[in-house]
Length: 297
Ligand code: NAD
Image 1 (tube, helix red, strand yellow):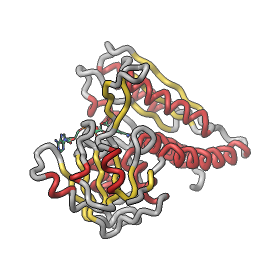
Image 2: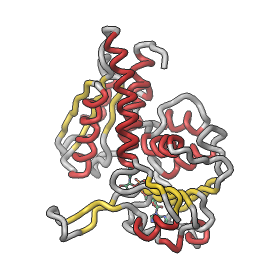
Image 3: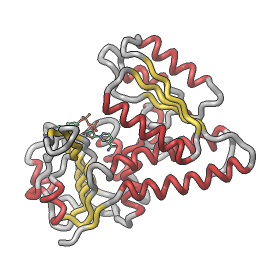
Image 4: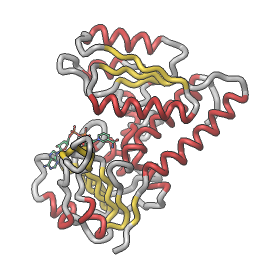
């Protein structure tokens, strides 16, 4: 079967250009640019890379941004007081706290301290609750990015069987809610599979849309995929590769080479879901800015 690659990299470039045009219009009215702040604790290489992409994207769309670095010895109280400072800072429209945080810090307590109006990652329970009820909110970046990608590629979700592997609070669980909601990119029948799921293949073989978000390289093999399925790979895993100068490379959860010929649409890793996650962060920041400045969408 001939399949189409869902090119998140190209799509994110297009959407960033659309955002930039809106920001240029805002600046032409002599208003300040939207501002995104980010807190990075410690020096986890993956977090450094994600943060680099986020700062680069802010520059491309014309936002101002600042990266606040703290040593991994920071206490929970100090981090929460930094969050309160950003909550109170009128020139910050939105901010993110890059996860994971060091083990001695309770990430839930930190996320709970963020002003929901500035929670552009959409991780605060207030935004999560509003999302679940279909109310106005900041949608979580990765699930929202996946919905935008499917919408832009004309992939229908209504009435489809969707199987999601992985039930994290930032990907699998919110995605299962969004796809089952009565909405444009919803109305699907969703199965949320996880580490205790039995007979996973029997479920995945029923999936019109299969989304993998568990973080295990090559976990989804061709025999688990229905002919013609849409296959979305959220996983980002680093594996050894001695043919590369770095000695490693990034792969998803899906065995792309074998699964692609069975699929109708499939995301690559890298260059699929990852860039869409950054783009939705930019969209949420613009939304926070417009709300603060009382500008129409
Ligand atoms: P997580 O690591 O918090 O949890 C993994 C989930 O997988 C759990 O819910 C668990 O029940 C499930 N799981 C584990 N083993 C399983 C098995 N054998 N069968 C079925 N389910 C199983 O999840 P996360 O934070 O959503 O991250 C998942 C992956 O997605 C990681 O590789 C992460 O790096 C990646 N990720 C990518 C993006 C992106 O922008 N592309 C964003 C977030 C996370």
